[in-house]
Length: 457
Image (cartoon, rainbow, N blue to C red; front, side, top):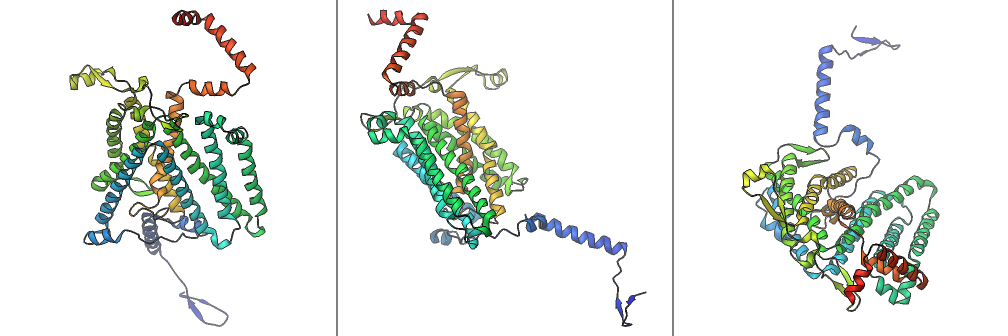
């Protein structure tokens, strides 16, 4: 039969598919699915993300001068030159702010933090502003203010202790700092609860979590960057420079030699770029550390001078920044003909920093790529032509800052006598006398106090 007899007596065509036809149809479907996956978004992913509104794509803001100068080039080479020129400009600006000193560096870190926060919050607002969620942006910026007040207040108390104790208003704020910080956060928490609207409970809690995760990623880690800076500018400059070097060299190796894709989240990343960036960053870190370790301006901790009310960078460099002889392994000795090599101990630590910057650091960029793909955007913003937003440039830096802070606390930093003295001076007189007598008895027991007395005589 070629049709189905209905009550009306008419026959309608019936679809018959042979095994050969089914096989061909399956092959066509497989080809379509493969093509969709190559384009970067599978059908399943599209359906899963169908409920997420797309963020408007910002217009190209490449300076007109560059557009005219590079108009004859293909889009690939045009992007290469735009990125290269802007990269050199940013590196020059980086050197300039280093020259201006630690205080300017801290202000720049704060500005970068605020801009990164604004870019991420703007994405959330662009996606969900059609739902008219009340107070979302207001509360987001309020929580940013609260968290910054807490972290910077802790920093001021730690590093400006004498100044704080000298000024009565600062002393009171320092004493009750954590209570004030908690009260400020609690106010924002109550405001959020009062802003809940029946129709949008889930979305409002979603955006509440969005804000807090952003604070964790951006504000907390920028605070760690400032702590690294106080340990010595070399702990600030070398890690940041290693991330920049890895980013540049991975792009260069990938651009000219890249053939093998590295990760689906970032299709342009290649194994050739990843490996080339790794070895380049190791060499760069060792060389940069050698030149910087010889200058007190870079290796000495940043301290506040109470007499001049300004920052000072002056000290007797620790053993970490004193040249030492290291015996070479027999394999390297046979190749180079050297039995020993003269290095700064910090150069050994720089290998760990460079390795993290080139192996683990890029995962911060992959994380950011996944975030951007989730919202179907290319960049966080269009602040820097050819590079995207500020967050696009600092997605790896924040992860690096946390590692450096943990590394210093685990392998470098020891007890700080100046902080111990500051804490002792804050005690009552009877407590200070008790500690003095205990310390005196301990030194006498160890035989150190008589030696000190004889030396004084």
